[in-house]
Image (cartoon, rainbow, N blue to C red):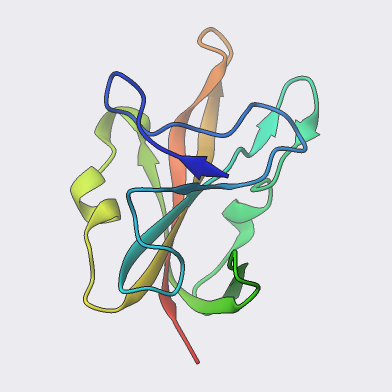
Length: 132
């Protein structure tokens, strides 16, 4: 699923359903192309439970990630970093920075769940680089 920006300039997210796929930020390169390709998915939903990136917080440096591209080819990546950032202090410049090689960013919600707001206070971001 292709995602853009909301009217307030923040990243769109997929529908809040347990069966919703991860979405590709269409203003980023496609996975496997030079630059930071950004994929966003939900960790869970109150109604449906675990979602596409439910286990993203368990990823560790060195893990492999495969992304099936629209043409059927597979872009392969190795995780180089996993970080949790407070939503109100999200380092957009760092996450969306365009490296001179194919990179991948996987983003979901994480950290403490704020019951009053009905959302997580942080984002989990996985940084990865292309591998053969």
